[in-house]
Every structure is written in structure tokens, then in C-alpha cells.
Length: 174
Image (cartoon, rainbow, N blue to C red; front, side, top):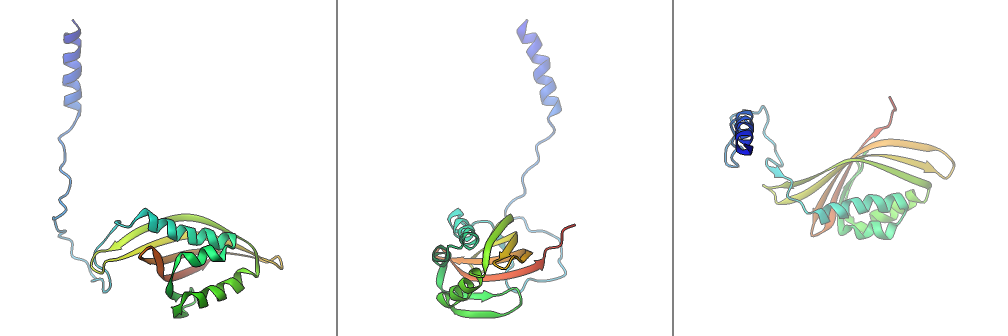
């Protein structure tokens, strides 16, 4: 009797499941023709280690807490840095850290509200990037408060940040 009940149930379950769709092949090429060709990176994947992500996120936590020694430890000895206002430099990380320390000392607190991060491995260049989007709220020692939304690009090599690009937008609540 049990078998008579299970048979219609099994047939119903099979009838409700549609045909299986094959997953797209890794080797299949898209037929979409794009209006641009990327000049720097054309193929990316997310094959970046979680340890590299941890290094990047630790750099933000160190900035937030004012731990400049920890912040310094996340960077390579030489850093390519592009500020949000377009100023760019390449040189010893210690020089950049000294400038950042002077600015951080003018703040009584920093709050970072991380929104999202994305790990990207540039296949054609064999480079790893971690991009982050966040809101930073800076309170100056004189009481002023400045809030901005940031999008940063962190290039990682050998477990350290070697390139850091910032993009900033003044925060305007809805």
C-alpha cells in the first residue's frame, strides 16, 4: 500500500522538475560585439586570496582606529598613490604614511561604514586588485564633521598594497 502512495508522489516530483539546463561552458565565447575595447585589462576573475582581502580591510581598520604602525604594515615599501583630487606619486611608503599621520592627528575620530568590496584578478596582466566602496565620517578635533563616500582601488602584490587609488564624493543624505 505504501508503494502505491509513493509511486504517484515520485511521478509528480519528476513531472514538476523541468529539463536541466546545461551550465555555460568556460570556453564558450560571447557573440556580443562591444562598442569599446579595454586598453588595460580585458579579462578578470575573482581569483584573489582572502588573505589579500584581509590585508586591504585591515588597512581601513587601522586608519579608522588611528593605528599608523598597523596601517604601514599593510603596504609594500614603495607605493604608487593617486589621491582623490588627482595628485599622484610613487615613492617610499614611509613618506606617504608621514603625511597621512599628520592628517589623522587632526581628527578626533574616524568612522568607516564599509558598503562592499570586490576581488579582481587581471588575467591578462597577472595582477590582483581589491576595490572597496564605503562611507567615511571624519570628526576633527575642532568639532567639524566631514562625510564622504569613497571608492578605492587597492592593487596587491606579494601580500602587500603596492598601488592605491582614491575616488571621493561628498556625502549628501537623501
